[in-house]
Length: 400
Ligand code: GAL
Image (cartoon, rainbow, N blue to C red; front, side, top):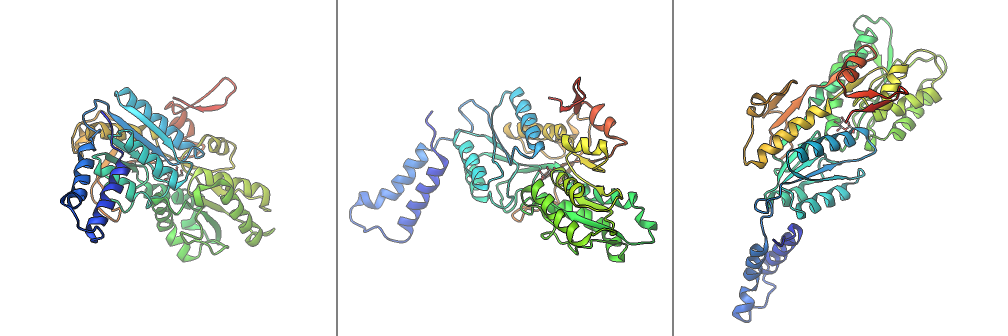
């Protein structure tokens, strides 16, 4: 059955409304008077709800970027499981470009998507296109990053991202023995992309946990930089993180001045910090470096000791919850905690209806638990579980 383009429908309705609303049309014959209404009826009659009766179940998956390792895994886990359940999957990566993501999503709506699973490049930039999706009866799951300022979002699936920041801060507090420290210790912050709503959860989790030591003066960023924006890293860029830390090291950590820790919000920024330390840090002490995502390059860094820890997010579990939620929505259900209680999942997941306000509504959410990874539990959590494997040459690769 011919499909009407959602975008065209919006423009048609808008022009008709504008033309009729502001009396620009000279009232001559009855046909002309009826023209706007006829146009609406024509559009409506042509607008076919492709999302229910063409027998296809189409799932649109929009990931932010291929350069950040994890989204490739998320995309392939999600696609494999939706396809296994008989869905037709449209998977797109937006190269971290807002317009590309908006166009990707609009194309998916036009290609008959019944469900959208979206990880936003910019969490506040999708309101319009998601309103169009909603108008076309498409169900919408915000995947991993909460989509802001849109009441079209039906559900949110992620990890407890505030806890990610807490785990990074606790690692630094325990490893530097801050509760009993007598002399001043130095820290610098390399936080996340400010348009990624998760960056705030990471930042708040870390800063609130470190606050007693920052306010007592036992822990000091010699650069004086601890604010959300001044420590942020656009696009989670490794190069930007490296450049910023190189400037800080050369400006505030001359020979004789120790830096004790760099709190990096994720692994791509941690990679930049490790490079800056190896090229521009004069002292010989071991500098703690945190991370997130357990990317392969960073697992090597942790094994060799240049990075100290990362926060692991079991992406396969996040995709299992999302696919289960998506299929239930496609069956016309309105899942709640029953999605968890009726499942056979061997991992913990909580249902939250109070804490994730996206500025338009409080989005019902499913949250998973992040895990702190160091040299001591890396084998058990990442290899014994089969998340990562080593080939005959000992190189690490992600299991399918
Ligand atoms: C966040 C995500 C993190 C990390 C970061 C950079 O939104 O929760 O796991 O991947 O993006 O991609």
